[in-house]
Image (cartoon, rainbow, N blue to C red; front, side, top):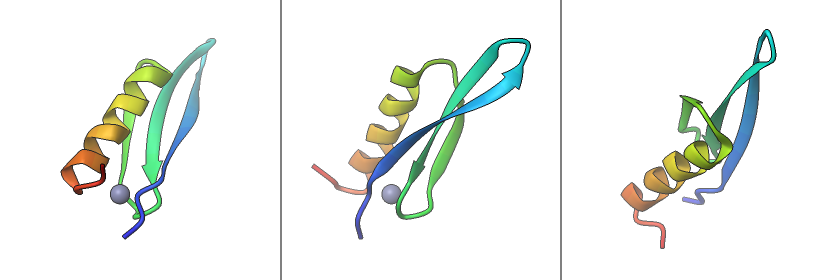
Length: 52
Ligand SMILES: [Zn+2]
């Protein structure tokens, strides 16, 4: 299984934005406050799946 992480911004209005990651396997996480935090969450997902 390939695990490629994409980071997607979610605009919430009033100039605020959160970031989510979406993996090519269908997993996702949302609500990260920064792009870096979403990337970290995505890497954590990859690590759990055994991706080096
Ligand atoms: Zn995945």
